[in-house]
Length: 91
Image (cartoon, rainbow, N blue to C red; front, top):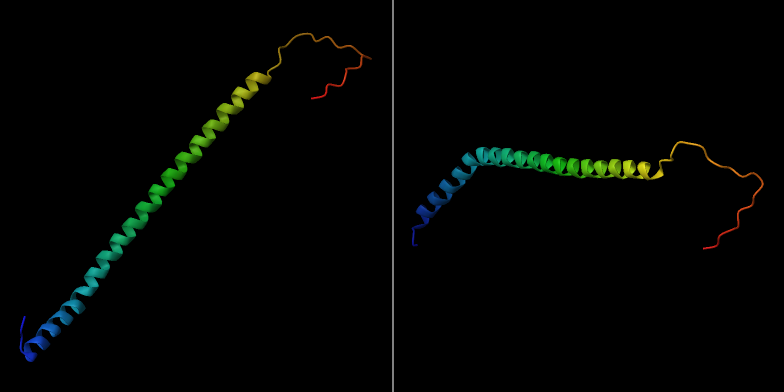
């Protein structure tokens, strides 16, 4: 594209004016988009973290209930022998 030197200056001046004029709104738009993306990231990360914590809590509660059921002692009389010695069991 051949342009005289004077036209090149006008073209460059127009590009510079466009950049100066549009820089503010473009940066504001990018800032809003960046803020929205940041908020969306925090919301998603918070939701994912919350689901992991809720799952781990549910797992722990169910495991504890199952453990308590297994350790439950039947109520009733228990025979106790006083003076007897249990043999040592080696593993």
